[in-house]
Image (tube, rainbow, N blue to C red):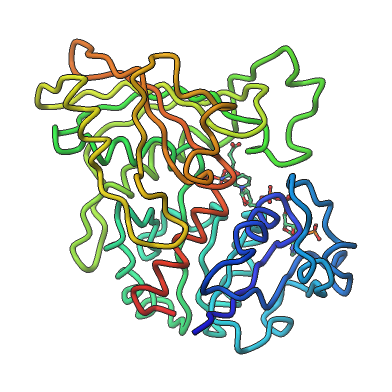
Length: 344
Ligand SMILES: NC(=O)C1=CN([C@@H]2O[C@H](COP(=O)(O)OP(=O)(O)OC[C@H]3O[C@@H](n4cnc5c(N)ncnc54)[C@H](OP(=O)(O)O)[C@@H]3O)[C@@H](O)[C@H]2O)C=CC1
Ligand SMILES: N[C@@H](CC(=O)OP(=O)(O)O)C(=O)O
């Protein structure tokens, strides 16, 4: 049976990716679109500055955009995807949760809240049971689930694969695409012929969210993973696809071959939007590259390569599409997991 879904913040860059990914989805039927007061009342085609390189699906172009309030969303909508600016989401999402909506959110507010599941379905699906705790503590009939930050989600599946060797310390340096900052986030004069060695708040997100994602859930709390994570985040002039250089220290000795096997064999999940193989490992040390590899698995696969031994562990590179696996695709996959596990 079809699951009726809506998108909060549907006109934005991530909202547009949701629309692209929901087109022809086998179970999700798009039934509501919301945005700011400025867009409310317009058709989607009038309200959205469409920038995806495929046309707006015909049936979506003519849909009316509503205000981002529970009253503007039909009651029979089962699941909401949220891609609002985090300040707006912090104010608005709780209103929907009080009204009983289940919200799969990409916005960064509440990701580290102890009673909010922060999930990558292939990595820590069991954290979803935090919803019980959340409902008890907040009195919500609905449920709030978050996906991690785009740079975090690029690295964490590779770390999950290496955790069997005892992760102790992780250093990561990122080369992040401009789409991560949104359409007007970085001006062309700032970024062409340049690199910017600072992205506000990003390093802290990578250092904390990764430890929650790999943390142990005991049925009540998530105990953060003990590894130390230090991140350095940089913006470079690519359009999509975050590339990261990771240095991982492990308790046990691990060869590059063992690490590559662990990544290749890390299990995927049987959900519509999930790639068949979660991590693709390149032998060619010059891969992965953003332009060549970001679309692998329809933008949902993680790529890794250049795995080498260091004194205390390994170094390697990884890459993912930041607005698909790192944003809309991540929320969509969490939505599919919520349905699969019976929360919707
Ligand atoms: N993981 C990643 O790579 C990325 C994550 N993100 C995160 O996703 C979220 C959305 O980002 P992005 O799509 O780039 O943002 P945009 O600015 O492109 O879109 C924001 C959306 O929110 C709506 N909106 C803005 N203000 C309000 C308001 N006061 N009330 C209701 N709706 C409002 C906008 O509507 P309107 O068109 O009417 O203004 C629009 O639909 C952010 O939290 C961002 O940090 C973003 C990019 C990439
Ligand atoms: N900060 C990310 C994008 C982003 O918006 O992240 P978050 O979902 O944590 O707000 C980038 O610039 O590439």
